Image (cartoon, rainbow, N blue to C red):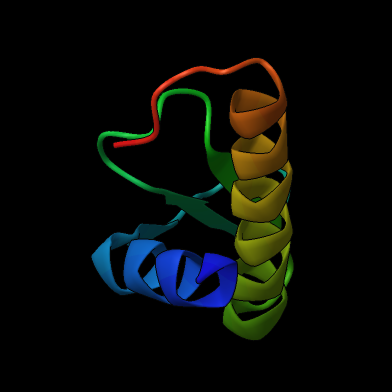
Length: 67
């Protein structure tokens, strides 16, 4: 179930190329504070998946809603 949630969030993610710092940025609209950067699109996506996983764990442990 968590894997399905992460995969769906990744499908909704937005990815951008940025000029300074690490060149790839990604975020998931509707998931506040969920974003990642890295040097390649693949690494950025992988980092974003880890951020989503951690975000989910924190929200579930605190009894917060998950959109």
